[in-house]
Image 1: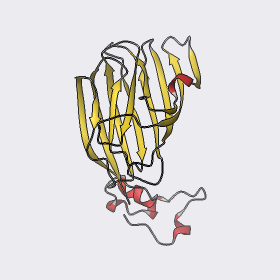
Image 2: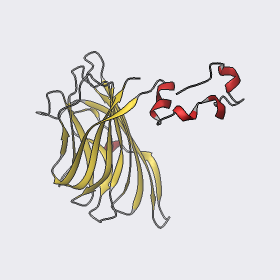
Image 3: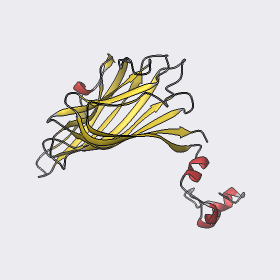
Image 4: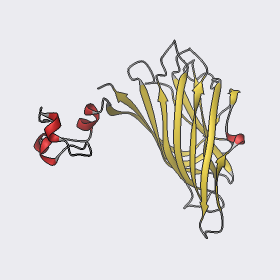
Length: 219
């Protein structure tokens, strides 16, 4: 990417780059812009596809190579009705998924026939120094058109100094034909390195769906 050096002359009054400030012929993809903002490049590390699976686990690849890991949940479908999709983390390579967590959980919803909406904090979805699985998706149904998708970020899992922060945003068509927007955030209260993650429904199996794990390459 090439940017004219006379920065002030290449910005609009709103602080946006003018069209001729960027040599567009040298822009290959959006990762070029990530470097300008001090961000990084997403590197796909692993893809797992569920088929009546009890769980999906990533037990390799989470290490000090990357400062952030991103998990993409794509059309997660439940084998049962009214069941939350969850995750937990491990410090021993997946032998135990019981990391202590404190989290927040709020959601918004809107029903198909426009008769019901909601927005609020959900105390049943948060944890206060809990070791159980953290809820990510609302209770789903088995109908073919009902599934959930979203993104989970895990920051600096290999740190042995600080706690490990996470944030997630998901959306789903819930069992009562509700569109749900779920927002979860918190921290894992451990200074041990986290090196594995497990996803599953609170009961039943993952009928189908895909989870991709990315590392965020340092710029």
